Length: 163
Image 1 (cartoon, rainbow, N blue to C red):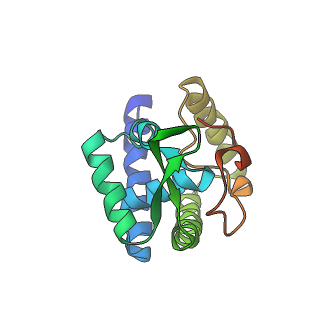
Image 2: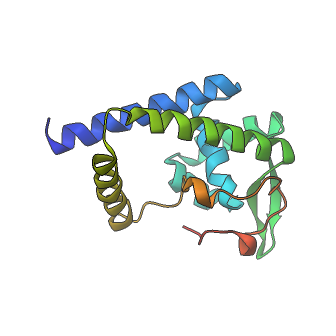
């Protein structure tokens, strides 16, 4: 299998993992992605759209549904009173951690057929692709996951730099 085919097909594997993790936790794959992004820090709507690959109207609907479920809240941006940012609620924080852990377990299992050296090589090459293409922090390393109850964390308190 060639590089392009393998990379595109692997994205379908990850999409399927998000969908299954979402089903386990009673949320959509898109809501799971939103929760994982917000684990890092609250973000403005202008930042979230490109990070999640969503048009403004689609993002608004996703955030509206997540607000209705009590997973996220809209809050004033402390640096721009006209702007709104989206942050996890306490319930969203708990669910984000459970969804994140489930997703990590499932992604790990995808590579069960690889030995340690192949896994390391794959991680190194994919990591390089991600960094060289300036992919925003939409999913973090398991050892960088913030501690529980981060729903009041501000951008300045984030363990990772803003994307």
